[in-house]
Length: 327
Ligand code: TRP
Image (cartoon, rainbow, N blue to C red):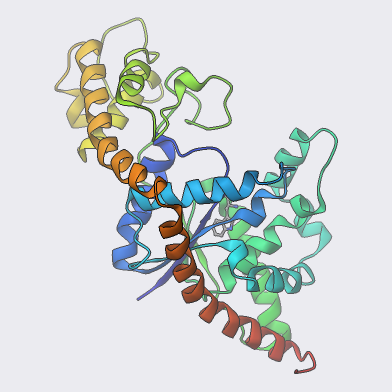
């Protein structure tokens, strides 16, 4: 079975775009691949945080992921800082990637431009830690959004360089960018992706929004002045977004659904209902998990133990091939 690995930062909440664009895909993947999913809390530290903030967000995100259907007994799901090999291998990665290569990372350029008074060194070396995440598990495929392609490329470059200098050590991973994954845009500004960082929360459906809030947000979604229902993001982004959401929630084809509607009102009502129906069991499961943090901790420990067994073997191999003095 092929091994897949992906990571997600514990920042903010999960929204409908995260769920339909990625998480739901992960839930399916756990049954067809040897899947590793990691809450990358150490990556979150690259931007200054308050004490306790990252820990609380990691717990919450883990519970959300489990509520969405990731099953710690089916996949391997864990928190990055619980497996110390991530930081250990990250140093070896840092010493095998150049300043020039890291300087070309567009995510660093974007994120450092947003930081006013403190750009951490970790923000710059972030891809080395990500390479460690991936290479520790002999990963074949990395399901990620298109914005992460460059980070997977640099991971391959580091792995190839290391293998070239010290002999076969790491498996070269491939990025898998889902093509047909649902496109979910901001409800108020449908030319932007739905995102947790946007100023106005009205355009983003949070996975934990109560049903009446979901309905209100979807019913007040931006559409356009004519009344034709057609699936075409170029000319009708708002309506296409609603079609895309309804299609994803009901596992149907958006072009086909477009034919069922002549007005925006019923389309919005049906999209709202479908989303509420999809989120209801997720929210119920989250409420249960939230009430029992010790159970979540136990599940995460189980995941970290499984992960560590593989990670430790990889670090051992890397150090041996590098020829560090054995202890
Ligand atoms: N950098 C990724 C993001 O911002 C998160 C991440 C960290 C990741 N380590 C990873 C993704 C390993 C895939 C594999 O989305």
